[in-house]
Amino acid sequence: MPGDDFRQQLPQALQIVWMITGLISGLIVIAPLVLSSGFLLDLFPVCAARAAGRSCILCGMTTAFVQIASGDFTGAQVSNRGALALYSTLALNFAGLAAYTIWRVKRHAIT
Image (tube, rainbow, N blue to C red; front, side):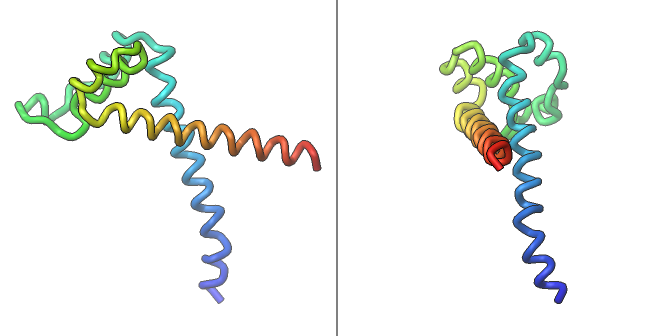
């Protein structure tokens, strides 16, 4: 039945999606640590909402991530109130992916 095939492939598809988002999370978390703040701030354009005089939920997030990477958590909180929570979530997602990958590699090396 088509439903059975879907049920069998869904866990693998979700795992692939999680791995992709984990890799992207890792890039987002590591980029402010290894790239210069000037480069990162120049890399992303001014938010369209900010250019129009408004703000969106992600306004100030690049600045906040750069500040987090330099240890300025208060400045990050001022730049965007949700920055610490989002950065922590992305870091945990990446750490979980790294731990899972190490576990899989060790498991396959033993067998």
